[in-house]
Amino acid sequence: MTDGESHATRAPGAPDGEGVVDADNHAGVDGARQQDRERRRRRRPRRIAAVAVLVSALVVGGAGAGGELYTRSRVEAAVHQALPGLSADAEVGTDGLLLPQVLGGGLDSLTLTASRLDLSAGVSGRGSSGVSRPGGSEPDGLTLLDVDADVRTVGLSAPFPAGRVDVAASLGWDRLTDMVAASASGAPALTVQAGALGSGDDPGTVTASTTVLGVDARVTIVPSIADDGGLLLTVTSITVRGADVDLGSTFMGRPVLSYLGLESTEISVDADSLPRGLSLSRVAVTDGGLRVTLSGSDVELAGL
Image (cartoon, rainbow, N blue to C red; front, side, top):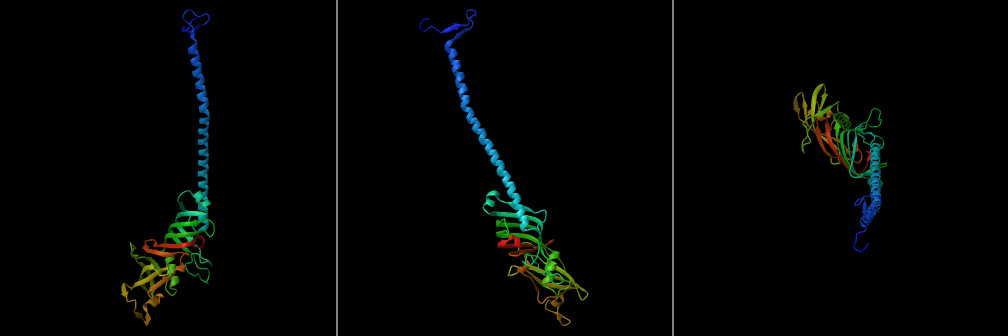
């Protein structure tokens, strides 16, 4: 065979023109297959690495989610420990990831909603309403209704300190009646209810009904905030048998107010009667009671 001639062979037993294999082409096919196998081998480690990264991300993400759920449950448990009088429907809200905050020693903020919060009174003054029971026993506690609280910079261990607490809640009419009776110990039995509802800057009015010397009387009271952050109730009118009575007048030689157990037109429920560390910043009359806003800084939740 001379130079320039094609290098080809015929397979044994094959007819002329059939089974002819070009040696150069055969070598090219083998080379391509070898290169393809090498490319697949090079890709395999990259695929394995990518799968490993994905699996690791899923594992870490799952662990993080589990850690957040566990931390949230611990936060809710701490809130109920600090405020054991919370109703069963209480909901605790938080901002941001909890785990880093808890590891740092506390929470930046939390919100709390509940239909009821019972604050028991005691020697520590927790939630004392100042209402003494017969025999000089411990005073009753204070019940807040429709509670909506915002707490800032809060610790998660006793005494559960908070940098700032703002609570919007309602004082029911029964509770307010007890507070008035405690502040005006000589007053006859009263039934307290809404008069004019509050709106905007107008707190509204409260109506107290009673019987004096066998005669029905009605007292109109305007709630406001006292200088010490307590509750101030100011008597603005007295009606007896439908007729207005002059607040400065006397009857049978006694001031009219004295028949209501009052020495003046003001009934003061001081700040000591409110949850410890909190004072009033807003008050308004609603159908369900007095809607109040209580605020305070550097408050211990366990001491409310």
